Length: 115
Image (cartoon, rainbow, N blue to C red; front, side):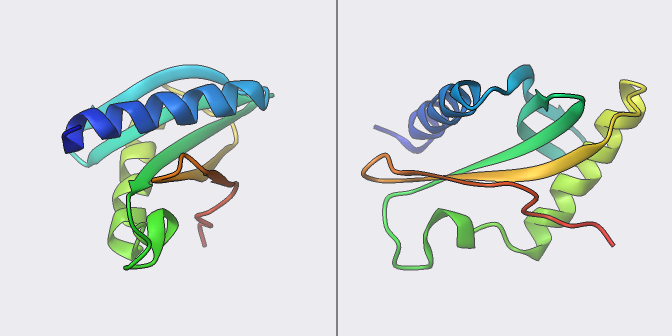
């Protein structure tokens, strides 16, 4: 399976997992000039911007470790663009869903905190 196909499969797996946790999908693969947000979901009244990461190996820290400061900044910028473009004023948070080669799902809520 190529990298793009694996990414799509990981996003679908993350969506199904979060749906079972009670979140509702608003939009998938939101793209703007600042970057892409894999999933935008609603958890009650809160918007949730979700970054999905897949790693076949944990040699470099696994899927969660791959969301470095630069990636976090891009996510925040893209989310800000979304909120302005869609005229949203809901409370929001950033979650990360990491998926490993054996399809283990790790969900980190409030993974990125804004100062």
